[in-house]
Image (tube, rainbow, N blue to C red):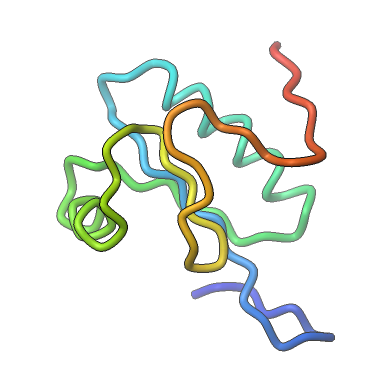
Length: 90
């Protein structure tokens, strides 16, 4: 269940689709999880090999992972880019 933005009544949810055999997508999930927590978003990591992940692939026509869905909209495929957020590698 997504968190609701109390002022706007909007859900705040981030879903990242990953492949368990793609190190880049798994590394991106760590980055996005941290960003989502700091930004007040509910976060879910979903494998494209699971039925739920396959549903997202079909629904959004996803061709590359990681894929980022924010508030029900596909915003990124492949390399994760979040406007205004600088990625810091550990």
